[in-house]
Image (cartoon, rainbow, N blue to C red; front, side):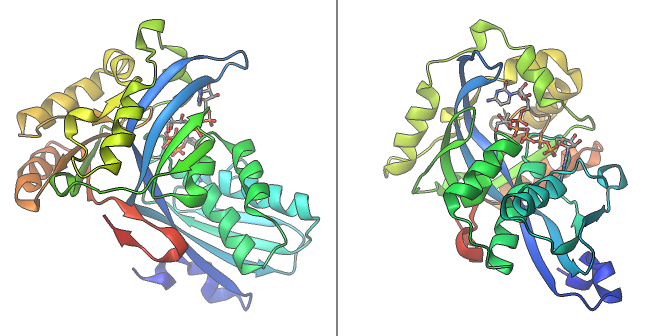
Length: 309
Ligand SMILES: C[C@](O)(CO)[C@H](O)COP(=O)(O)OP(=O)(O)OC[C@H]1O[C@@H](n2ccc(N)nc2=O)[C@H](O)[C@@H]1O
Ligand SMILES: Nc1ncnc2c1ncn2[C@@H]1O[C@H](COP(=O)(O)OP(=O)(O)OP(=O)(O)O)[C@@H](O)[C@H]1O
């Protein structure tokens, strides 16, 4: 990675700089248990951090404001989750320190990979550590949960069971199966609104959480996780509503993927492989058909010390 390429504005300033990576996730399971009175859905989902990341570069300024820029210019505005995260922290602590944030997106946007949520959590953690702020993990969690259901997961990352509307996190220790070492992600050329996907659920899509419970047990035992344990309650509706996603799924299967699952609210699909030799033909076939394709791995990013499963 070339840090100066990711921080072009840093070259033109004498402010102090902090540079972090912000990793995406996939959902190994996603059980939707039902609809709640507040309009959200009750979930049990097992999420895993993957080695696909955006970069964030923070520079201190003398102005009492936050400004941000992004290589995806449509995201360069004050509604961006990185600005909202930094503002929430500044407000909570009454800080006046100015900040410029440069966000370099590599993770596809509105893709079911949690990119914006990860950016928000990475901002909270970076500022807490860099500025040595007197804010506890519980307080960071509260800010994270106020920003979005997926944001608290990214404060710890790795492998975790996420419950409630997604904000109640239980980290899991795992025996990651060698048979699933390589994760092939395929993104159809559409963005999907998470709210629309949840709105289109029917009660027949609800489960009792058994898929997530079963995978939790499988991951913690030597018997291990298998591809057939993966499940997503949102998948039926997304495949029915978005023909582009159904077509991409079929093309992955035709190219030799043993099975295909949706990540989050999609449209990104993934399949797992034991070896690069098995993954490569599927990767090549989908790339040739014009899809965005990412070959990645499960990681545990704890303490900035990346461990590959
Ligand atoms: C689909 C997942 O990515 C799975 O990891 C998450 O549940 C979505 O997390 P997120 O993007 O952080 O979601 P939020 O920003 O909190 O919510 C976006 C919208 O999705 C719907 N939503 C989200 C989470 C949830 N448990 N129930 C919902 O019904 C709501 O309509 C909400 O307005
Ligand atoms: N830093 C950011 N990165 C990406 N999108 C952002 C960001 N800040 C705000 N957004 C808005 O959030 C929307 C969802 O983006 P994101 O990439 O996080 O979706 P996602 O991968 O589907 O997330 P999730 O899996 O958590 O539902 C985008 O359409 C965009 O308008």
